Image (cartoon, rainbow, N blue to C red; front, side, top):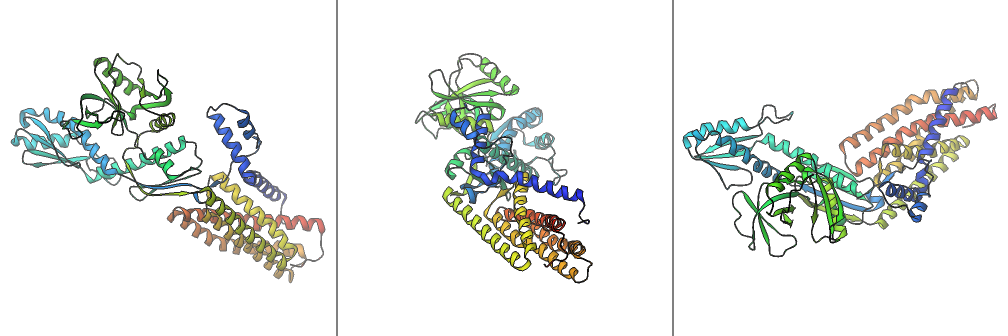
Length: 554
């Protein structure tokens, strides 16, 4: 057929061949998945055992090995909805201002007199000055210490402010600073949760922010929600504090600049520590599970240059004094500094099992959560239920494909058979595109594919009906076929463009299952236009050039 040039034929064939090659691993999902897992394990440093080598050999490495990711409802796994307690970060931000403001006010001692911190609520910092007459100077000093908030919506705002209450300065964070802190906290929480989940080797987790302070975590393939919570639920805040004293009463008054923490390994023992840490886990660059000199599980750690310098300087100046290692508000141990520890590395020991030391190393390496999280919803989807969903989706797809295929053959005969071949290629190309963009297939996504099967032949119906009309007036079947495709094309684009706009709106406005439906629907529309117009035209053209019929019946 002269109206379908050679370059277009070669391009269509190439696209279809590449699509089939990319989608091929999904026909052997279990084998390819096991092979990929073995390759990943070897890349992570696992010993190459005969079993692992056999698993790797299940799929040739010269073939594509990317798979369409299965969502939680198809694979089974864990679902968590958590809330990040950003108000705790506000309190820590105020706590960190005290040394700065204390020094600034002491520089004005001639006007403000003595400076003393008072107890207050967690959302304010109260500072009493000795000379009430110097309040204006004190307020100015606090204002000079504040910084602009770097935010597009808070132009000109400062990060904190002070008001006078008699001879007491009341320092609070501004609304603009609270909003900026909340945004930073959420972004950091999302990144750390993602790093923690990735450290476990789990494939394609879904970690999304919901609303102002909530995070939705869905991890296919993990055993239970409790297992997932054990990975992400701990804040894993590591810090090193000077020890003031020990106590047996948890209600003992630690002092204004001190804090009391229980011992993790000594029942009934509490440590009073200086509130300001010498170094924190934020300065860690690596942590690995290890064993101490007695063969007990432990964790090796290493600080960055700044943390290593602070750690080394403190140990050199405090030989013979205890130094507490604190994790999430509990003292793991409080060893006495025996010598200067240079290099910024050390070891954390405690009553750990091998699994606990491995998990602690993962948590420390991924980083501490900036705030505690509260679980609002947790759910476990069993692998059996996920397999049932896969089977149900596969069955619905086959039924839809069979029904549409029979209809097209009954109504359009041989041309209907050509449309069915294009429909099969359409489904293959959908999976190929999902592979390429890393999309996740869910039950609503399967619904989108089933809907696409029904919609995909609409374009063929338009073309075939147009060919029928052209056969009544055109000069010969070849001309009728060419005009049929040419004149139906605009209608096909219009009909599919409106549906594509709906899919785009669903993706942008929706979340979770709605997005899964929108992705497969949108990809299906794009693929159906390509296969219904170009693939069907190529097949019909090849058949026509082979048979050279004098007349055709659609």
